[in-house]
Length: 71
Image (cartoon, rainbow, N blue to C red; front, side):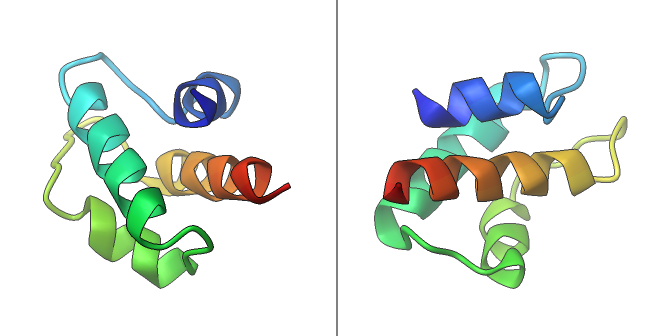
C-alpha cells in the first residue's frame, strides 16, 4: 500500500506502538480527501498520539502517499 511504503521511505513511524493507528488514520483520510492539505493531514492524525515523534515525518509520508496515489 502506498501509505505503508511512504511511511517506510520517510521514516514516518517510530517504535511500532502508534504506527498502526497512524497508518489506518492516513488510509481513512486519503479515502475521504485524496489531495489533503498539511492541515487536513494534521487534523486527520490528531487522534493518534506518539511520545517519540514530532509528527513531521509522518505528515510528509502521508503527503507522499497522496501524491503517489494521485499520480
